[in-house]
Length: 165
Image (cartoon, rainbow, N blue to C red; front, side, top):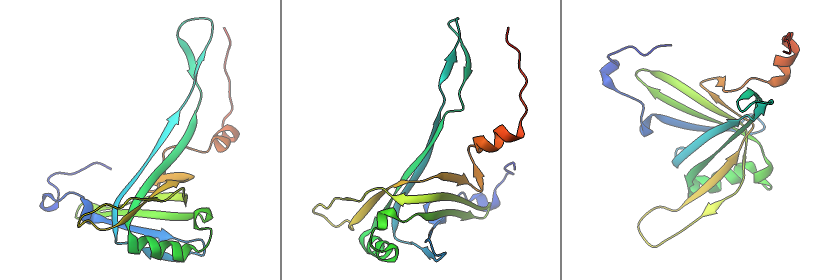
């Protein structure tokens, strides 16, 4: 899909365009409005394969490692962990981050996410109290698309032919 110009009224997605939803194990979905930040990323690092020369002859598919964090205000944190229940760090969730504006809605999905810790830091001042939650996850789908394919599915659908020499 290409971007067409000019955009409707020139409006781009910004922080106010975000909707953050968490789907719990039983399928219950809750919208969390009180978030201060959300970050997610992945790394996929392959290993160079060398033969007898100085240049690599290939690269392995590598390992896909997604992670992220969300910073929520104290009331939203308490509400979330109460919904997850005891052992809340062991409960997998699906987090959906939607970005909606005139040019369209895009939804990124964090699959199999788990709270990997809780960071609480308070200091004197007028700022609201927050909890930062590092997240581990199984996959990130960017508007429905994963950055990697399942290696087992690829291996079973491909026939290989190569020559040595």
